[in-house]
Length: 220
Image 1 (spheres, helix red, strand yellow):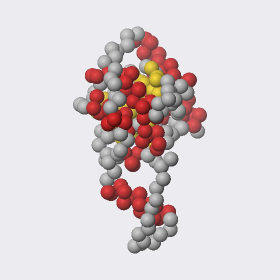
Image 2 (cartoon, helix red, strand yellow):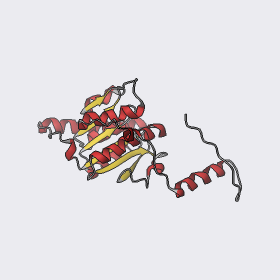
Image 3 (cartoon, rainbow, N blue to C red):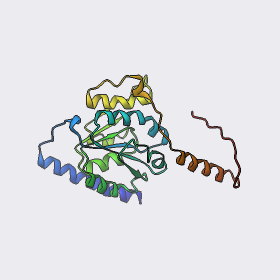
Image 4 (spheres, rainbow, N blue to C red):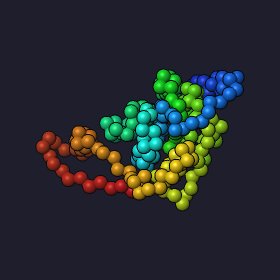
């Protein structure tokens, strides 16, 4: 079934490519005038957290723009209600909702798309097929969709993953983003969300009502 969805997405990419070629004239690139921006971090939760400083920086650069996030279905609940974005879109992975993404992207009418990872070409292909004029991404992988990008920023292994994502914004907007606050990854988690995940942990641990266990968390 994946191959069917993938073929359908790729067919729409080819139609969009023919449409752009026939039009001939590309729109002018004016990132500071963008009104609707899609940010993609649709891989693991670690990548999504590393993207938080970049999302905050983007909000400072475009205070009046609508900024939406595309996240994996298991990660999206963590980002809802954090005021990081105007909307959180859900990606199921492996082209399973690729066609619905294209439909949503067209309806949202984004001015540009910023992808903060280099794996899984589906979001890039969906963004291109939906007619988003400017698409930026980090990394070197997925060569088959690299020609759909406006540009990509190669990894610099001497830099932290957060800094690598900020480098994409530096290239787009021609800004520094090297202050200490630019690298802060903290996110405001509501008490309700903490209680939700605590209840899930207690349920999975088989603890009954009224149990008040102590938790130890590790971040590697």
